[in-house]
Length: 249
Ligand code: 1GP
Image 1 (tube, rainbow, N blue to C red):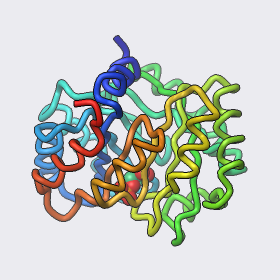
Image 2 (image 1 turned 180 degrees about the vertical axis):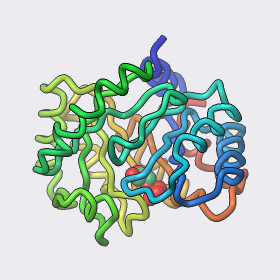
Image 3 (image 1 turned 90 degrees about the vertical axis):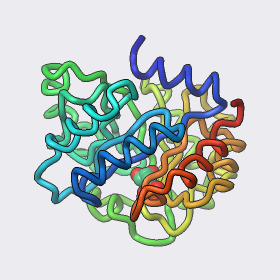
Image 4 (image 1 turned 45 degrees about the horizontal axis):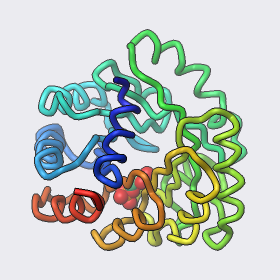
Protein backbone atom coordinates (compact mmCIF):
# COMPACT_ATOMS: atom_id res chain seq x y z
CA UNK A 1 0.00 0.00 0.00
CA UNK A 2 1.33 3.47 -0.84
CA UNK A 3 1.58 6.19 1.78
CA UNK A 4 -1.21 8.10 0.08
CA UNK A 5 -3.44 5.01 0.19
CA UNK A 6 -2.61 4.62 3.90
CA UNK A 7 -3.62 8.22 4.52
CA UNK A 8 -6.87 7.77 2.63
CA UNK A 9 -7.63 4.67 4.65
CA UNK A 10 -7.10 6.65 7.87
CA UNK A 11 -9.47 9.30 6.56
CA UNK A 12 -12.10 6.65 5.77
CA UNK A 13 -11.77 4.91 9.14
CA UNK A 14 -11.41 7.92 11.44
CA UNK A 15 -13.45 10.59 9.67
CA UNK A 16 -10.37 12.71 8.95
CA UNK A 17 -6.61 12.44 9.19
CA UNK A 18 -4.54 14.29 11.78
CA UNK A 19 -1.21 15.56 10.41
CA UNK A 20 1.37 17.25 12.64
CA UNK A 21 3.92 19.56 11.02
CA UNK A 22 7.47 19.41 12.35
CA UNK A 23 9.53 22.43 11.34
CA UNK A 24 13.25 21.70 11.81
CA UNK A 25 13.99 25.40 12.25
CA UNK A 26 11.82 25.77 15.32
CA UNK A 27 13.48 23.27 17.65
CA UNK A 28 16.63 21.26 18.13
CA UNK A 29 16.98 17.59 17.28
CA UNK A 30 16.13 16.23 20.74
CA UNK A 31 13.01 18.40 20.95
CA UNK A 32 11.76 17.50 17.50
CA UNK A 33 12.24 13.77 18.18
CA UNK A 34 10.46 14.03 21.53
CA UNK A 35 7.60 15.91 19.93
CA UNK A 36 7.31 13.36 17.12
CA UNK A 37 7.10 10.57 19.70
CA UNK A 38 4.41 12.33 21.72
CA UNK A 39 2.44 13.19 18.58
CA UNK A 40 2.40 9.55 17.53
CA UNK A 41 1.53 8.31 21.04
CA UNK A 42 -1.40 10.74 21.23
CA UNK A 43 -3.00 9.88 17.90
CA UNK A 44 -1.33 11.80 15.07
CA UNK A 45 -1.76 9.81 11.84
CA UNK A 46 1.24 11.11 9.90
CA UNK A 47 4.05 13.60 10.31
CA UNK A 48 4.78 16.38 7.87
CA UNK A 49 8.37 17.64 7.91
CA UNK A 50 9.70 20.84 6.36
CA UNK A 51 9.13 24.55 6.09
CA UNK A 52 8.72 27.31 3.52
CA UNK A 53 11.94 28.97 4.63
CA UNK A 54 14.61 27.04 6.51
CA UNK A 55 17.86 28.29 7.88
CA UNK A 56 18.61 25.02 9.67
CA UNK A 57 21.52 23.23 8.05
CA UNK A 58 20.68 19.83 9.50
CA UNK A 59 17.52 18.88 7.58
CA UNK A 60 18.89 15.42 6.80
CA UNK A 61 20.08 14.65 10.32
CA UNK A 62 16.79 15.73 11.85
CA UNK A 63 14.50 13.87 9.49
CA UNK A 64 16.57 10.71 9.93
CA UNK A 65 16.32 11.03 13.71
CA UNK A 66 12.53 11.40 13.47
CA UNK A 67 12.21 8.36 11.21
CA UNK A 68 14.34 6.28 13.58
CA UNK A 69 12.19 7.32 16.55
CA UNK A 70 8.79 6.66 14.94
CA UNK A 71 9.48 4.29 12.04
CA UNK A 72 5.92 3.01 11.59
CA UNK A 73 4.17 6.33 11.06
CA UNK A 74 4.13 7.91 7.60
CA UNK A 75 6.74 10.66 7.37
CA UNK A 76 5.94 13.07 4.57
CA UNK A 77 8.11 15.98 3.47
CA UNK A 78 6.27 19.30 3.11
CA UNK A 79 9.01 21.06 1.19
CA UNK A 80 9.73 24.74 0.79
CA UNK A 81 12.26 24.10 -1.94
CA UNK A 82 14.41 21.48 -3.62
CA UNK A 83 16.89 21.28 -0.74
CA UNK A 84 14.24 19.51 1.35
CA UNK A 85 14.47 16.00 -0.08
CA UNK A 86 15.55 12.96 1.94
CA UNK A 87 15.46 9.20 1.52
CA UNK A 88 14.40 8.99 5.18
CA UNK A 89 10.91 10.14 4.18
CA UNK A 90 8.17 7.80 2.99
CA UNK A 91 6.63 10.41 0.72
CA UNK A 92 6.83 14.05 -0.31
CA UNK A 93 4.03 16.47 -1.07
CA UNK A 94 4.90 17.29 -4.68
CA UNK A 95 3.42 20.76 -4.38
CA UNK A 96 2.50 23.05 -7.18
CA UNK A 97 1.60 26.46 -5.81
CA UNK A 98 -1.45 26.86 -8.00
CA UNK A 99 -2.81 29.91 -6.17
CA UNK A 100 0.19 31.91 -7.40
CA UNK A 101 1.62 32.75 -10.76
CA UNK A 102 5.27 32.20 -9.93
CA UNK A 103 6.55 29.78 -12.61
CA UNK A 104 9.32 28.41 -10.39
CA UNK A 105 6.72 27.22 -7.87
CA UNK A 106 4.29 25.98 -10.51
CA UNK A 107 6.80 23.78 -12.39
CA UNK A 108 10.42 25.01 -12.19
CA UNK A 109 11.43 23.54 -8.82
CA UNK A 110 9.62 20.33 -9.72
CA UNK A 111 11.81 19.72 -12.75
CA UNK A 112 14.87 20.07 -10.54
CA UNK A 113 13.44 17.87 -7.78
CA UNK A 114 11.85 15.02 -9.75
CA UNK A 115 15.05 13.06 -10.55
CA UNK A 116 16.21 13.26 -6.92
CA UNK A 117 12.82 12.10 -5.66
CA UNK A 118 12.99 9.08 -7.93
CA UNK A 119 16.61 8.34 -7.03
CA UNK A 120 15.78 8.40 -3.32
CA UNK A 121 12.74 6.16 -3.79
CA UNK A 122 10.33 8.64 -2.18
CA UNK A 123 6.64 8.53 -3.11
CA UNK A 124 5.50 11.82 -4.66
CA UNK A 125 1.99 12.95 -3.71
CA UNK A 126 0.87 15.44 -6.33
CA UNK A 127 -0.70 18.34 -4.45
CA UNK A 128 -2.33 21.55 -5.59
CA UNK A 129 -1.24 24.08 -2.99
CA UNK A 130 -3.60 27.00 -2.44
CA UNK A 131 -2.51 29.84 -0.19
CA UNK A 132 -5.45 31.66 1.42
CA UNK A 133 -5.35 35.20 2.81
CA UNK A 134 -4.90 35.04 6.57
CA UNK A 135 -4.73 38.51 8.03
CA UNK A 136 -0.93 38.76 8.22
CA UNK A 137 1.76 38.34 5.64
CA UNK A 138 2.92 34.77 6.29
CA UNK A 139 6.40 33.48 5.53
CA UNK A 140 5.10 31.43 2.62
CA UNK A 141 3.45 34.50 1.07
CA UNK A 142 6.65 36.52 1.38
CA UNK A 143 9.02 33.79 0.23
CA UNK A 144 6.84 32.66 -2.67
CA UNK A 145 6.29 36.20 -3.96
CA UNK A 146 2.66 35.36 -4.67
CA UNK A 147 -0.72 36.74 -3.65
CA UNK A 148 -3.01 34.57 -1.53
CA UNK A 149 -6.62 33.96 -2.52
CA UNK A 150 -8.98 36.44 -0.81
CA UNK A 151 -10.62 34.72 2.16
CA UNK A 152 -14.10 35.91 1.19
CA UNK A 153 -13.89 34.53 -2.35
CA UNK A 154 -14.62 30.79 -2.06
CA UNK A 155 -15.46 30.64 -5.76
CA UNK A 156 -11.85 31.46 -6.63
CA UNK A 157 -10.62 28.65 -4.38
CA UNK A 158 -13.19 26.30 -5.95
CA UNK A 159 -11.95 27.03 -9.47
CA UNK A 160 -8.34 26.48 -8.43
CA UNK A 161 -9.16 23.18 -6.73
CA UNK A 162 -11.11 21.92 -9.74
CA UNK A 163 -8.22 22.88 -12.02
CA UNK A 164 -5.93 20.85 -9.74
CA UNK A 165 -8.26 17.87 -10.07
CA UNK A 166 -8.44 18.23 -13.86
CA UNK A 167 -4.64 18.44 -14.00
CA UNK A 168 -4.57 15.04 -12.32
CA UNK A 169 -3.36 16.13 -8.90
CA UNK A 170 -4.07 13.73 -6.03
CA UNK A 171 -5.22 16.31 -3.49
CA UNK A 172 -5.58 20.01 -2.78
CA UNK A 173 -4.09 21.81 0.24
CA UNK A 174 -5.89 24.93 1.47
CA UNK A 175 -3.32 26.69 3.65
CA UNK A 176 -3.58 29.98 5.52
CA UNK A 177 0.19 29.66 6.16
CA UNK A 178 2.06 28.74 9.30
CA UNK A 179 1.22 30.99 12.22
CA UNK A 180 -1.68 32.58 10.34
CA UNK A 181 -3.80 35.09 12.24
CA UNK A 182 -6.96 33.74 10.67
CA UNK A 183 -7.68 30.19 9.51
CA UNK A 184 -9.08 29.06 6.20
CA UNK A 185 -12.81 29.93 6.52
CA UNK A 186 -15.18 26.99 6.92
CA UNK A 187 -17.34 28.42 4.12
CA UNK A 188 -14.40 28.12 1.72
CA UNK A 189 -13.62 24.55 2.84
CA UNK A 190 -17.26 23.51 2.40
CA UNK A 191 -17.47 25.12 -1.04
CA UNK A 192 -14.27 23.43 -2.25
CA UNK A 193 -15.19 20.05 -0.77
CA UNK A 194 -18.60 20.11 -2.46
CA UNK A 195 -17.02 21.06 -5.79
CA UNK A 196 -14.17 18.56 -6.20
CA UNK A 197 -13.69 14.86 -5.62
CA UNK A 198 -10.03 14.86 -4.56
CA UNK A 199 -9.13 14.97 -0.83
CA UNK A 200 -8.82 18.39 0.82
CA UNK A 201 -6.00 19.16 3.29
CA UNK A 202 -6.50 22.22 5.52
CA UNK A 203 -3.95 24.01 7.70
CA UNK A 204 -2.59 27.28 8.98
CA UNK A 205 -3.37 29.03 12.25
CA UNK A 206 -5.48 26.25 13.80
CA UNK A 207 -4.85 26.61 17.54
CA UNK A 208 -7.90 25.05 19.22
CA UNK A 209 -9.39 21.56 18.92
CA UNK A 210 -12.86 23.00 18.25
CA UNK A 211 -11.48 24.94 15.28
CA UNK A 212 -9.99 21.74 13.92
CA UNK A 213 -13.33 19.95 14.40
CA UNK A 214 -15.19 22.74 12.59
CA UNK A 215 -12.86 22.30 9.63
CA UNK A 216 -13.46 18.55 9.53
CA UNK A 217 -17.22 19.13 9.71
CA UNK A 218 -16.90 21.55 6.79
CA UNK A 219 -15.24 18.79 4.75
CA UNK A 220 -11.50 18.76 5.46
CA UNK A 221 -10.14 15.26 4.86
CA UNK A 222 -6.87 16.09 6.63
CA UNK A 223 -6.03 18.78 9.18
CA UNK A 224 -2.47 20.06 9.68
CA UNK A 225 -1.33 21.42 13.04
CA UNK A 226 2.13 22.95 13.49
CA UNK A 227 2.55 26.09 15.59
CA UNK A 228 -0.01 25.05 18.22
CA UNK A 229 2.32 22.22 19.32
CA UNK A 230 5.45 24.31 19.56
CA UNK A 231 6.95 25.58 22.79
CA UNK A 232 6.57 22.36 24.73
CA UNK A 233 4.96 19.14 23.61
CA UNK A 234 1.86 18.86 25.78
CA UNK A 235 0.45 15.34 25.37
CA UNK A 236 -3.05 16.16 26.59
CA UNK A 237 -3.34 19.01 24.11
CA UNK A 238 -2.31 16.81 21.20
CA UNK A 239 -4.73 14.14 22.35
CA UNK A 240 -7.54 16.74 22.46
CA UNK A 241 -6.82 17.60 18.83
CA UNK A 242 -6.86 13.89 17.92
CA UNK A 243 -10.30 13.51 19.50
CA UNK A 244 -11.55 16.60 17.68
CA UNK A 245 -10.26 15.52 14.28
CA UNK A 246 -11.14 11.83 14.48
CA UNK A 247 -14.88 12.19 14.25
CA UNK A 248 -15.40 8.46 13.69
CA UNK A 249 -13.32 6.92 16.45
C1 1GP B 1 1.45 25.53 7.59
O1 1GP B 1 -0.64 24.46 7.55
C2 1GP B 1 0.60 24.47 8.17
O2 1GP B 1 1.68 25.34 6.25
C3 1GP B 1 0.52 24.55 9.66
O3 1GP B 1 0.22 25.85 10.10
O4 1GP B 1 1.90 26.18 11.94
O5 1GP B 1 -0.15 27.63 11.80
O6 1GP B 1 -0.34 25.23 12.47
P1 1GP B 1 0.41 26.23 11.68
